[in-house]
Structures are given as C-alpha cells and as structure tokens.
Image (cartoon, rainbow, N blue to C red; front, side):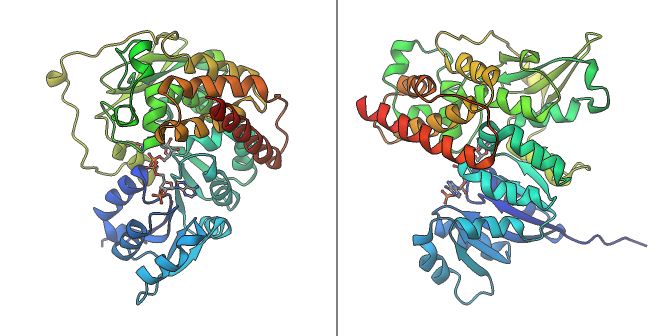
Length: 389
Ligand code: NDP
C-alpha cells in the first residue's frame, strides 16, 4: 500500500529574489509535496502577489510598509493574508512552517531569520550577512532552541555534504573555491572604471545584484570565510581560498590522512537549495548533469590579494572577531549600494570598508542590541566616507 506523505510546510523569506525564485522553481516542480505558508519581499509587489497566487501561499508580507495598499489590492479577491513592515516579517517567520528559506539579502534578514531559529525550525540559510554580522550570537540561538541550520551558499553546502561532523578533529582544512568573478583577469586600472552593469555580470552564476558585486570585489569570498568559521567546527587558519574559474568544484575538505572530499556539480543554485529542501533526502532537480569529458579541464589559481584586497581585510576581521565582522558587513552593504547607484567607483567599495574598520572601534559582541547599534554606527561612518568621495 502506498504511503501518502503530508506536504512539507515551507516559508520563503525573500521569495522574490534570485534564491527565492530558484526555491519556488523547485517547489513548483512537485507542488503537492509542499504547502506554502508565507512568502515575503521588500518592495516587489507585482512578483510577490503573482507568486502568492500561483503557490497558494497563506500569507504574503511586504517589508516596506508603503507598499501595503498596493499588495492588498493585488491580492484582493483571494484568501491570502496580507501584512507589511518589520514586525510582520518576524511574524511570518514565526508561523509554523517546518522549513524556512532565509534568502533576504543583507543584515535586514537577521531578525526574521532569528525568529525562525527561535521556534526550532529547520532553516535553510542563504543570507550569509546574518552570520557575518552576528555569527556567535546566532549560532548560540541555534543550539539553544535546537534549530537546524542548513547552509545554502554553494560552497558551504558542498562542505556540509562532505564534512565528517562526528570526527571533526580529523579535518585538516577546508578550501572554499572562488570563481574569481568578472574581473578575474582585469588590472586595478581597468577595475577603477567599471560600470555596475559589468560588475553584476557574473561569468558562471545568475544571482542578485549585491552578491554579484561582492563576487566581483571578492568580498563575497571574505564573507564566506567568516560564514564557514561559524558553520563548521574549525579555526580561521584552517580556511583556505582557491580561485577555480569553472565553478564546478563547489568546495572541499582535506582530512589529516591526505584525503580530499569535494562536492562537484553544475553552477546551478537549485542543486544546493534542493539539498536543503529535501534534507536528509535528495530530491531530483532540473540542473544540468556534470559532463567531465565535455569540460576536459579544471583550473586552479592562488587568489591575487593585491588586486582583490577584500580577502585580506575580511580575514583580518575574522581574526579580530567581536564587532569587526559586523562593521565590515555594514560598510560593505552601504558601499555596494553606493556603487550600484553610481555614487562611487568599483575600487572605492573595498576602500570604504577598510576605512570604516579603522574608524569604528572594535570590541566584543555581547548581545543582539549591540549588533544593531554597531551596524547603524558603521553604516553612518561608511556614508560619511562615501560623501567625501
Ligand atoms: P536578491 O537581491 O535577488 O533578493 C533579495 C530578496 O530579499 C528579495 O526578495 C528582496 O525583496 C528581499 N529584500 C531585500 N531587502 C530587504 C529588506 N530590507 N527587508 C526584507 N526583504 C528584503 O538576492 P539573492 O537572492 O541573490 O541573495 C539572497 C541572499 O542569499 C544573500 O545574502 C546572498 O548573499 C545569498 N546567496 C545568494 C546566492 C544566489 O545565487 N543569488 C548564492 C548564495 C548565497 P524585493 O525583491 O522586493 O527587493
């Protein structure tokens, strides 16, 4: 007799973004297996309303309160509950979905992600900025509330798949692979004049604007080092970065006996997302299967820390700990927006981050209120630096 399984209840924080849409793509391929509890966005009313109708969401939340009326109109005649604002976002995360995708971009995702963690949900974490700005505190909450955190970032998802958590002491190091971004072969002179459209044009991955710029400066890999430090039982010096332009090896773990375990796949986020959606089972995805004969070769290079100083700066922040990563993240978010809006040049992004780190005093990070305060202070300092530029 066939056993019918109850649909898995899911909520997607940031459903209108690149990760959110990829998640819904997977859900849409097997709609009977899922029950969508809540979908959220920042301002994109049209897409949110469309998704909420297609996926029969129970609740749709728009973070920007000024968009409430528009969303309410767009969903009139349906029984989808509509809400707006920060508190509504937290409330959506608290609704009883078993599985929550945390795919809001930036530190703005911290509060709702914590709300899901605090009710012991299974949280698929794409929003790396959360862990960068509040890693120790967030991991404490995960343990305290017995929540399950599943890494979505392809590198961390790869490591999660091959890391022997039972014998963590046998791990020698982990290696995060980096594509090198669109400017892998550009000189600093060339990078000084690149336009936002060039920076968001990633060679291998189709992603949101912020992470695409982070990949271009390689700050993304810096943020990922900090993310990895919090997700896995390892020390900062055990985290290595290698440039691998084909983005086929998503990351690897080296064990003390010299064995290296890696996860490979096409550069398609649906593979990593599906791993967390089906976890602990694997589910089918439409991602292209890897054809190594067609690929023929895989290349590896040492990251160039002169052309891409973000890696060094992020590593220093990781070593410093406390509020340093919070400052780094806030300054980077502000600088990336300024670059996308044409207010500063590409090379200024990392310059703003470095200068902010010298201007905001670092200390231990004791509570979530401090994360908020340091984040606001760092954003103000970064804005001031940008104003001078
Ligand atoms: P996008 O910019 O494509 O999407 C961001 C989502 O967050 C959108 O739904 C957006 O809503 C919402 N959002 C933005 N700002 C706020 C806010 N202040 N409050 C509430 N919601 C907000 O980002 P990505 O999907 O590319 O990335 C999401 C996260 O996942 C990032 O942390 C990124 O680093 C990480 N990640 C992304 C990968 C990718 O392939 N894209 C790969 C690995 C990690 P709206 O549409 O209305 O603006």
